[in-house]
Image (cartoon, rainbow, N blue to C red; front, side):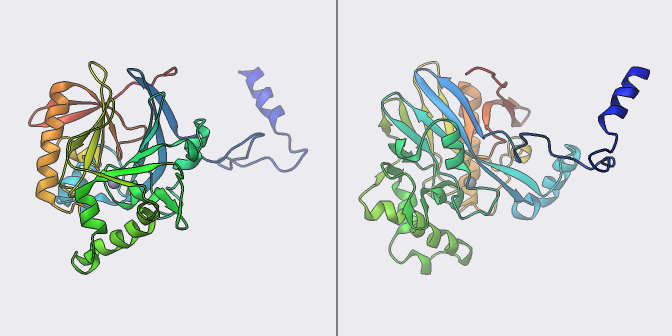
Length: 319
Ligand SMILES: [Zn+2]
């Protein structure tokens, strides 16, 4: 005990300035503010997949979900605070011949907490020009916003793929006058970030369930938006479903899949798609990557009572 006391005393004798008080944090040499770069690698069969963090968004979920009292009681019982941090995740699938990005983050539309996808892509060893295709799970600022910055295409060499229903809903002629007031911002932002690809002939539409590339198939999950789509990656035993916005709050919606969120275009459709997708995931046992599950958003779904439970995948030091 005595030796430790002397060592601590020697660490701060106040020669170079006043000793810091308790709780006063000092920077150390090489200090970098923020977290480690937001990427996480895994293998899915022959494909190399990199989960990329676009950052987080702070939201008080209670007033924007269909059962505010239930949301508050679940968070209280979990010792978690509201507002909470919601991850925004995207995934890069490197097939060896193509680099395919699933969702593009929020770009400049969500403030300082988000828009970090490109920095994390670079940290993972890629550059935006490497991306051959961007598959959008749907058109919403936190998924399609990162396609363009300042009206310019971020992924210059990429074709953008999205279900035809979302293009019709968000980018169709005269839509702004026909949607509810709360959706008009999304329409304006969709033009701002997707039109640069459309005008360059780089927008591709598909209808429902199709094989987009070998080993990558679209999975309709319509409801949250008319064309919400998951992407099933890999074949045979090793499969990963990148499901976009099936779940916005893991705390609430696995156990209570009927709870909806104000961002749903069709809340009944969103709830029934969620129930079906969760049921299939629990039965089939494939890996899930979720856009709003805590980064890297990877894990499995299992049945629990009348609902489901999220089982985060164990962290791997080596992919
Ligand atoms: Zn979203």
